[in-house]
Amino acid sequence: MISSVAGYLASLALLAGVLVWLARRYPQWPLFRWLPPIVLTYLCAMLLAASGIWAINDAQTRAYAEIKRLLVPAMILLLLLQCRLGQLLRLGPRLLAAFALAAGGIMLGCVVAFVLFRSALGEGAWGVFATLAGSWLGGTANMVAVQAALEVPEADLGYALLVDSIDYSLWLMLLLALVPFAPRFNAWARARSLLPPPADDATLAQSTAGESQLLLLAGVGLLGAVVSDQLGQWLGGQGFFTVSVVRILAVTAIGLALAYTPLARLSGSDNLASALLYLMVATIASRTSFADLASAPLYLVAGLVILLVHGAIMLVAARLLRLDLFTCGVASLANIGGVASAPILAAAYSRQLVPVGVLMALLGYVVGTAGGLLVGRVLMGLGGVET
Image (cartoon, rainbow, N blue to C red; front, side):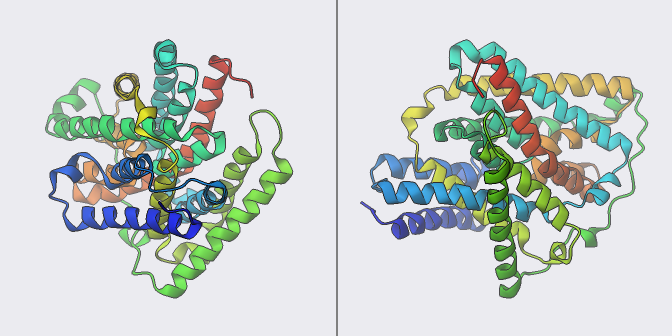
């Protein structure tokens, strides 16, 4: 049994690192085709926790609290360094409108699913749908940020991760399967394909990061976390805008501001943020168990309901606004799949459109956390949860 804080953190980092390395080294393994490394990290950490490998004493509990307090804001800040709002606005009004409608469909779907399944899942289901909204509006990093801000129980993040992985995979397969039917869809929607010119790939590419850049980025991320934590202590209070919520909102604003500084040109921020994300997911999973995931099948069905509501809104929008299938599909996947999959769908239409998918997915990082918090606030009100 590992009782020290150093051993606790080292084992979590090693677990996440090994799984990510295996996924990159052996992508052909069937396991990695169905379960991404982020989900495997969560499941394996739960298995180890159930086996009693960690003592989970007071020292480790304090370390867990400090990790969430500092590393989650640092991760959000590093992700947002690449998100220049001016660059995102170059996508044009049609793509931005499609993205907004896709996001609205996900938020409405979460409300519908909560109302339909609340009696079966219990009042605490609001936290699952809030964290899932954070992920399906932005990415897994936004999910973790919403979980930290709203202090959602660790087990509920496990539900959200499973729904995010399995239901998202089904949605991705559907959107890719629809690509050959684009002409028919566009004729039905009377679509006017007015795609903007692709963004310059040079603005999206990053060179290999050196140790000086990584150290500087790590320092900036941690300093931003400390500043946002202090702002949370000063401005946070009772009600919805607690210390943790203000902390996440503050670091989001700081990250967007720093995107206009020379720091944004440093390479490695996305890789460093991803490393922090895996460490955070492993740490959260170490505090839960499989016994807490008894309602997983019902949550998977609820996730499909969210996608059905989202898809129905996109179909109506396509008909009324004459949006082509590419615009609808990439806007949808930029929310639900993020940077990892929106460019894949864009490339299925044309390789020249990959930057469009990347930029739309980056927009999700900007709105994902705030959108998840908004959904959480609405669901708390519907569920009668005191704020």
